[in-house]
Length: 389
Image (cartoon, rainbow, N blue to C red):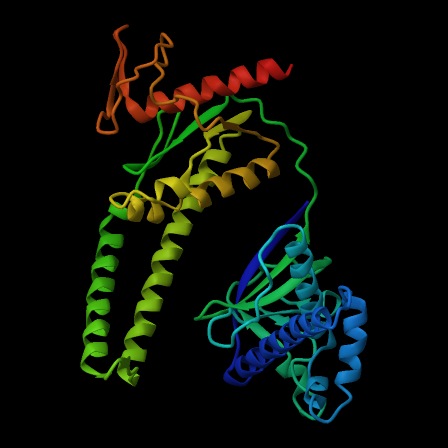
């Protein structure tokens, strides 16, 4: 089993500049590959393999115009060419057409040679981060990492890549771990996702909506205030039809970006804590409904609340954490009436509205609407497992 570990880098100013240069080299090779494939197609040629393109790119580096590429790792360029070719292969299978990477809009990233990657407790060494003329070459190649002892130092690394998220550089690396052979035997869990609460389990555990906390509301209020400031400055500095971006506007936009990043990190951290707590109970199976999130987002009254809940991310984490722990993940049919079905007698209440938060059945069952749905999902899981035997 290969798991990915992501650590934050703390480069110096010179190292930070070099990392951006490496990302620029990767972008250059990627765009060159797409341009070369388009030119070849216009001339009536067939699809060029990444092997042929890498050989052609090696000859290109010998010219005076592109001689500067020799100062950087060859693996950065080779992997970028391979990634562009993979993008074309996905396009042939029905995916989107590959686009050129933009210096302003694309996320800076590049590949690192896995066999040259070295970790210590507090530093990581990258291949050819500087040229051979630098006297402090060995020292310059070592970059400090934010978390000590986060990555094992005596193992093989898979597909290491450096990415920049707008504030910090991150290094993600795959590490092989032994498979988990323990099979959970506890009772299954049904999970109902919602807006009022993030999730409700059949064990009567309610996980609150973190967007209703004081911390999130305070940050959202600050974000709105900064957005109003930026909007007014754009209007005041308008020249005819076009808008002029001043240095003060850039400063405010950077503050807004940091606020958005902080809000995203808080929400992601909360989802990780919630999903990990559910998985630690070691249920034999987990059942979730197949929500049409794309269709739900069309509701203008609920779209913002649904977006902030990050329901797809919650489901994604539950799925891969279930695989790691040998837990059966069952997805209920999209049209399964988990909310309208009574968890006691099985009667379907067809006139149930979204505003009805308490489920009242003719049999005398009075229960929270979301808890009733979670219990029905759990029962659905038992039926699916019995039919599979």
